[in-house]
Image 1 (cartoon, rainbow, N blue to C red):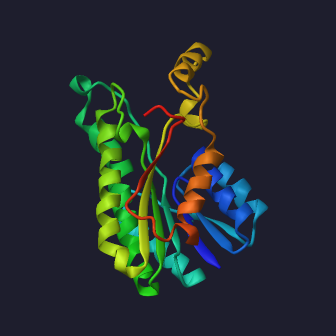
Image 2 (tube, rainbow, N blue to C red; image 1 turned 180 degrees about the vertical axis):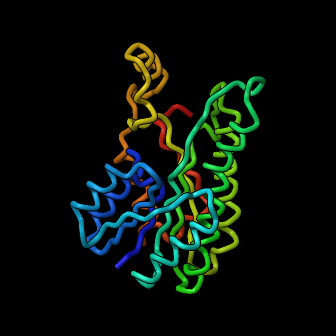
Length: 241
């Protein structure tokens, strides 16, 4: 059995990652970290009642992380894979950005990754095995206007991942980050038809990515085939960068 924790478990990307593990690995036990929104995650859990569970998790709260990891260890005895996927963005030009907006985005994207990695490392070090995959963003290396907060947070996720990878490599733990570009999730739901067409013209592949394409990369990085890959930052963007 492999025990896998995925945060942001009710979103399009989190669901796709969870479903990919459940479909491709019969030994996977998936824990979907959710907060207030959980309807879609509950549907996936109901489809795999023995192998998928919902987990109450406020990713910005270190105490919640401690409780969540303890719950997983109590049920499964181990934690093999952590996917830090939860996050949000509040776009605004810096000159007009309230300090609360800055801190909210940094907390939801960067602080949450720190709390999650710190909570997972101890059991992973004890078992001498672990896979941590942190979902960053193409904005970390190619930020658009209005995303100083989000880009800074996601660039921090990449740097955190690279540094942590060096710290835990001898313990059999790999740490990698993924930088998705435009992916067909709820984040693109507010884009009108003309804006979609214009955005797609700027993508060499002329289309948005599918959540399953990101999920496949996460699955690979969590597999034994990726045992010698750590500290990497894999962009999935259709060739934009």
